[in-house]
Length: 238
Image (cartoon, rainbow, N blue to C red; front, side, top):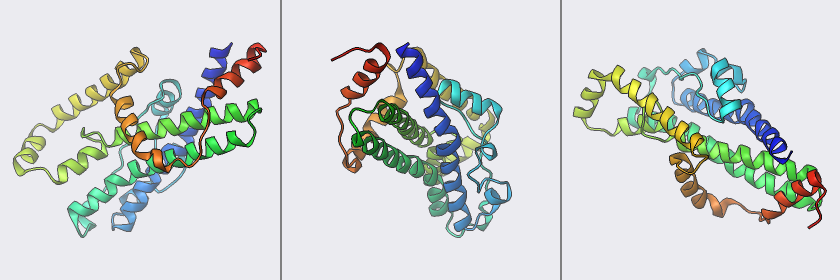
């Protein structure tokens, strides 16, 4: 019973990820693009908080069931950018920065709500949902910064790469994109198969979590969350 309830809470957190966190990150990237002179994201409907503008049915299903998913690649018109390297770097940093900001906000909100009443099972459940959503946001920010095409991290790396690498990239574009996507799938599947024991994303997320730890302004006894859920489901007294 506890596993069923836990999975239900996880599904709710993934719903927040799909309908709020991912659209907000895409909106941030489209907004920064517009501010720097690139209006193509807006013209293609990406300057929106509607999650349907940013993903498809397969992406939605993958996000809800597996906890990760891919949205539509955002198209850009870089011809209107005044400072190419700087502007593309800022555009590429927009989505990861939005993910990290939402991680900080959600985790602070989760702990604050939970601290209102230490005896409330409802608030304990809400804390779990928001905490999971916050962790997913952190992981998505880490994924976005990976130096693999077509992710934002690669776009930043590409702007400061050497000419010989650029020529090699364009001459092998299709093959590089094929293997890049396979590497991403392998990273995700390895984490799922090993239940997080072998997770590159988890390892990098832990490093970023330590970096952001000084921005978490509230504290909580995390063992109490599990205690409350067990007490409610099994009527166990501790």
